[in-house]
Length: 423
Image (cartoon, rainbow, N blue to C red; front, side, top):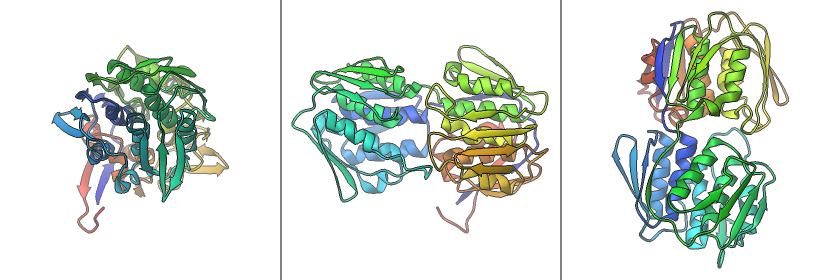
């Protein structure tokens, strides 16, 4: 089992490049099922989750080829199966994205209920209610969601919550439905816009992505095309927080600052100098960070996927900070790990109160989930002494070569294999 070893305290300086967005690439990859012509995607991140989606698509009958670096070609023109494999879906929640495309193309789909990071219940009932609104009959059989339909018909769908996954799944299902579909109270995240742009390149007719109401005019079929996946705003935010914590000057390249307004505002409130242009963010903190209060909200609010990383910064800020988590009910698992490093954090229901300390101390900690793992890396980089992070397979799900890229900024960080254990 791999571990990440950090000797903390090095000042970080330089530029770091952001990879393609995991949370955009995965639904876009699922969306290739809708096309019967070849599709090429560029800027696809080299991540374990991408490899898992690759295997899901191949198991369903899609030909997948990595033609070099971050470029993939897909061909779903052959016979496509209607049942996703349990052993893959159980390991990654995003595998559930294939249900909408399968239902649209085959008029039937059987997908195991999903797994992934244990950060909350995240029920799929919003997805299933939407499929029913489009004319499908939905049931749960043997741990699988099953949907069948003679045909899908456009409908007005009001989401109970602006779920990103449900918005994406229903948008894909409606792409080949008969007539007009409106998704109201839809999620507004940039990844929604990226998926809509991708589908439109293939011939879909989607408008309003990025707003509370998305309109999809169904088409008979989708063609092929080439599309570049957007940069990863969560990775960009992670690097911006990392730079702010370490006292150097760090430039985050290949990102869209418009996707990070909530974070940029909070960093400035913490005393960080933040400059940005169209494609980069530069951060510098000459003094100890100041305490702030945040509440996680759907986009354009503060992203829940950056909550753990900012908490790591709050642990060494001057004063008392707080984080209220409104999206997931179990997303404070990193608190106990930060406490092992000397952080002072108290949890009251869905709010964490963080009393800043002068310094953190290196310690053995675990990456309890993807973003918690990133928080452990950020904490380890500023801690006194040696930090050893286990369960780094979680980090591999969302950060491409994190160790190599951070090391180039001046960090003392290595990845080692532990022969005594196997993942």
